Amino acid sequence: EMRPRRRLARAALFLALSLVLRMTRCSKRHYKAKDGTAFAVDAATGRWTPVPSASQADDAGASTARQPQLALPWRAFDYDFASGAFAVNGLPLVIRPTREEDERRPDQQEHGDTGRTIWDGAVVLAKFLELRMASRVKGATVLEFGAGLGLTGLAAAALGASQVLLTDLPYCLSTLTRNRDATMDRWLGQQAEAEAAHVNVSVSSLDWRDPLESDAARILATQPEWSGGVDLLLGADVVWVEPLVQPFASAVAALMDRFGHPDTELWLAHQRRSDKTDSALWRAFAASGLRWEVVGFDDEVFGVDSLYAREGTVM
Image (cartoon, rainbow, N blue to C red; front, side, top):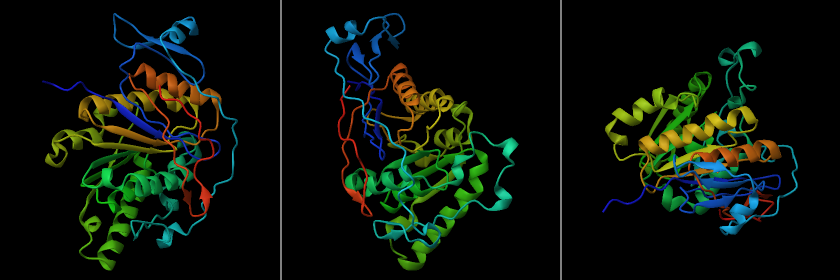
């Protein structure tokens, strides 16, 4: 008997009064999003659609959670990433900034070319994987959305993932490749027999606006190492303005449908900056057939509380 496909996304929404979420293809017919918007499954299309009255979802047993107040702290983690001072599983991650010659002119940039920066979400998700998900990552096939400088995906490699695919827009790829090479060279130099030093870490372009025509999709479709599909999708602080919401949600859904399996999961570290953007994100996930739940992570990461709001709702 075929198992029903589950589309699972666990979103670790850290820092600044944030949440940690788990997302699956929802088996319910009604539910209410965090902003109070009610959804129901359209019988004709099978897609989630907003319903006029929230009471329709309430009658079906939907639940809500208190909306936390927002805050925008300065970046909390100030480590010498370029020297390998940040480590996962005892292995240094050598994360160096984009070279000046690889930076795009301001008139060529999209949303500020944020892939040139290590954001707090990447640090927290890396430590979350180490502290809470090491056994899940070990031996898994992992794809990172919006990898930027590569910290989170390389953390998965340090934990023994079998395959890691770091993806982003083309302007990030040369830096991603250099950081991958520098990190794995360091591992080979320190521990020649370490499993992580032999993980296959690939770098490829992935434009969320056309994900199935991307180089990353071609790797997933043609390389035998990925024939079993993608086990884990990762994203660290990848959605910070509303125009990114729909492309990201659509890309997640498209890759899960094409290259996922019933146990494929998305783990997303997301710093909350805007109620409007967050509400749009939940609606976009729902419309793509994803359900989410809050997953707590109140460990400290280098002395900084990684999760300040622990309220949440399983949808």
